[in-house]
Image (tube, rainbow, N blue to C red; front, side, top):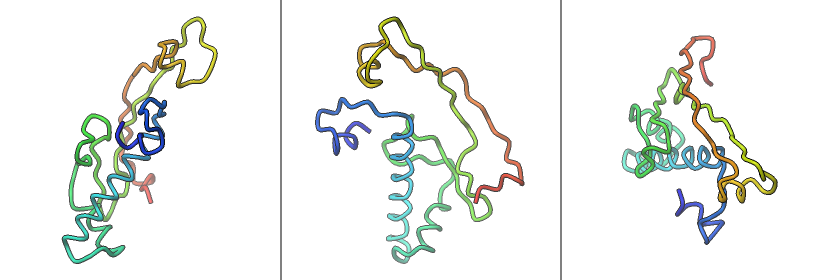
Length: 126
């Protein structure tokens, strides 16, 4: 992730929110599906879709521990139903830019739990 981040921040020190990391993960899932498509008939929309369905509980290469294991299928596009919940803990002196505050330890993100959502049919995920 730090190497990817250096594309817009050569120092590699920019603060990256969880939304940034989720976006990188989404892009890397698509990249691997496109690689699968290229090796299995060519890069077409249909083959990319098949590439997304080709694996179960997978993470893009090199992102283990960052990207959550995900599964897509022809009948269910909800890749994962597990959510991590974080709480920001702010110490005294917590004024300034978020990235700077995290770097100096004034803000810490604490994992407070993981929620497993049910795979309900009325939440199909299209």
